Length: 75
Image 1 (cartoon, rainbow, N blue to C red):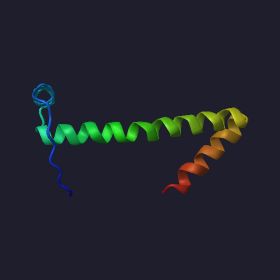
Image 2 (cartoon, helix red, strand yellow; image 1 turned 45 degrees about the vertical axis):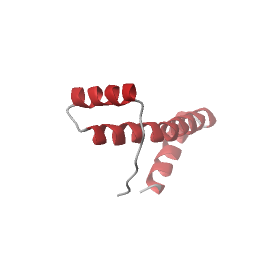
Image 3 (cartoon, one colour; image 1 turned 180 degrees about the horizontal axis):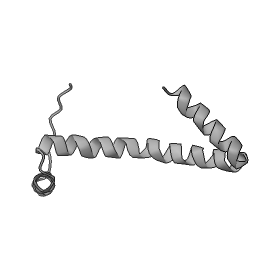
């Protein structure tokens, strides 16, 4: 695991601390969770667009087969 030191404005620190407390997790866990969610959002958007494109390129049964093929290649 890597370590990083951040200098946060007090208002942001307070806001993050409050959010972490509401979620019942540590500040560190909340920040890691938030950064992970932000970092993976673009990946999910790209996947949705790719799947949507597949659905418009093929008839329904072919799209489902193509989707299954893509997903099985990721395993």
